[in-house]
Figure 1 (tube, rainbow, N blue to C red):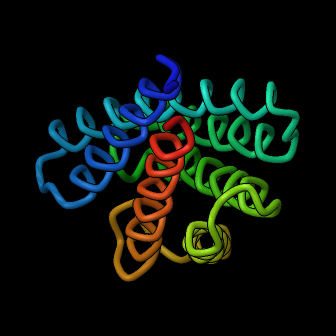
Figure 2: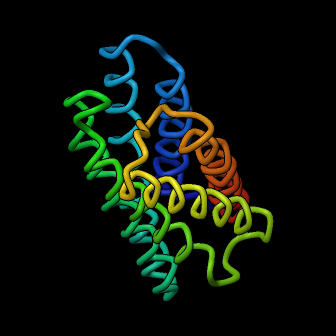
Length: 170
C-alpha cells in the first residue's frame, strides 16, 4: 500500500523538477524567482519525507544523502530573491551540497543503476560548475553549457525517484 508520505514526496519531486527546469529557461526575473521558490519548497518537503522514509528503512547513507540534498536546496532558496548575480554565493554552496547528496543517495544499490548514473553525472557537472565559479568564471545559475547541463540529469534522476516511490508501494 502506498503511503501518503510517498505520494506527497513523489508530487514534491515532480513539482520541483518541472518548476525548477522551467525557471531556468524563462527570461523574466520575477517569474524565474517565483518558479524557483515553488520548486525549492516542493523539493525541501519531498526530501524531508524521503530522509524519514530511508532512515526508517535503516538505509542511513541514502537518508543522509536526501538530508544533504535538502540542505543544499535551502541554500539555493535563500539566494533566490536576491536575483541571479547576487545569488551566486548561495548557489555555489547549494549545488555543492546537491552533488554531495546525489553521490550519497547513489552510493548504495538502493536505486536502479540508470538512476544512480544520472545522479552521478549531475553531481559531477555541479561540482565542475561550483569549482569554475570559485576559480573566477562568471557563471550564473542559468549559464550554459554549465551549470545548465546538469539540470536535465538531475530531473532524470527525479523521474527515477518518483518511479521508485510509486513502483515500490504496489
